[in-house]
Length: 308
Image: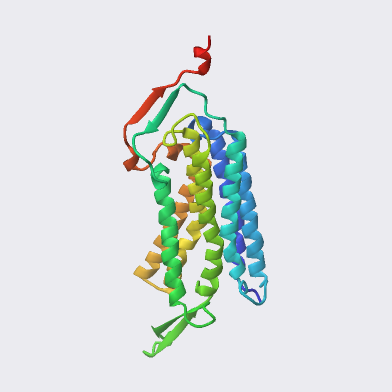
């Protein structure tokens, strides 16, 4: 007896195809538009492929009903996939950018803001808002489904008071399973919380990397942060559709609402993939508006000019 629908595996070839097509498009557009050279793009693609394979392996275990008992049984093991994929993609972005991106050219001009900038103020505005929205929606959806799960060891949801199909005016109940109750949202967040930790540590590392330009204007640094935020959004977006699960069995306006939620999640994933493979389009958005302050520019001559 399988613990997860076999259709779960059908999405994996589609995901690989979309990833490869997006990578090809990034190479065609070129570095002048995407902000990435071929080696940086390759590092991201390899990270994406590794993450997709990890999701595939865990999904295959879920379909086969492995493990048969315990915390990750009955398909719950598949919920660890997005977290593992996100960690692999974030690691690939960091390694690729540090090994392949050219260092900023030395310049006698130094730029610094007149006021102290907080952590959030130094992040690209649009990518940060997208990532915050994705994880905020995922948190709300998973909390809702966790507390609405009824019976079946937190794996199902029962609708009551539904008109019977017999047409005699009687009411019946309908049980939806698998339903993302605590049995599934627990492992899901066990996988997604490390992404948040890795994202914060990675961005902190990027901001501390020495550069000849100011942190708010360095293009290479901004592109790396855009890709990191995109990776987190890409792997966190599937969890944001959990709240639509009870609506999938409904009719009328509720069924339309479920479709809109799924479409919004798909659009978010596409935008996040573009952030990973073409960060140059988003890095131009700049940091948060509160950091728009005048700069101090100091021309620093090299010591060699003052030597006798």
